[in-house]
Image (cartoon, rainbow, N blue to C red):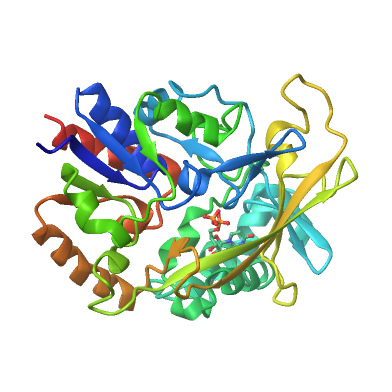
Length: 372
Ligand code: UDP
């Protein structure tokens, strides 16, 4: 007899949502993960009372009320609002692009003046923007493109802005108001107690085996369940038989500093070409510099983030959704659809630059279809 209805490969958000829903529907589920911890890339680890975002900053934000109602079952969220600062060769700018930024860049004071400045600069782009560079200039003009977008984007993606798809830059709002909130989202915050605790709550009562590599023990693990939910990289699953998809990886240099305040903000982006890191995260500011009892924390933890091309053995973080990779992914997707007992999901399984809320929405959607 087969002991589990579902084997869920990966204890990140996609896997945890599906596992929770399947258990609620009365299914027998087993979650495995090759890492020694749950929570995938939203994993947070406590250092000196600070929840350190081990795999990069995760700020939860959504416009989807269903997703918000869903996730808040597992954690209370604080009122953190993401307002990163851009540091361009020592000049500081507000992000996303808004009246504060336009004032700092051009000295303009009114929305009309800012709009006129942008209009004057965007004229160099005629017709539909063909790539990220053209899209950026047509949104905010060349000055902002050169100082706040080009260097950061090329470091993050390791590619020229002319080679990148324009949708990436459309993630950023452009506003003619004084509003430094990075996200256009009705709901935003950081789970109190950390993401790891939140995912542990989702997996409450569910069997989880860590340090278990699915592809290494595929035959014996497959024999344990009727169906597999796979949230790892799709090309790895197929042993790269159509070729490797490209990903960006990220390396963090994390330091505990014996001072209370390093940069005065959770995120500072280094938008020039010369600085080797893309941003520095100071984790304590996600929770206003306080410990769980509301006391000021005397130390701080910072992470410098370096972006690199993924190679075998690295953690894949960002799919590179350019033309070439999208075509290759479409071929892998056909192979995936031909496999009857496995469902591919999440950022790596679907090769998609998903935010957390979109991953949750996608896992809920799939659960509703699957668990009828
Ligand atoms: N971006 C930029 N300058 C910035 C921040 C973001 O040009 O200071 C652009 C860049 O193209 C980047 C995209 O916006 O790839 C998304 O950046 P974000 O930092 O929001 O991505 P995340 O890593 O948080 O998913």
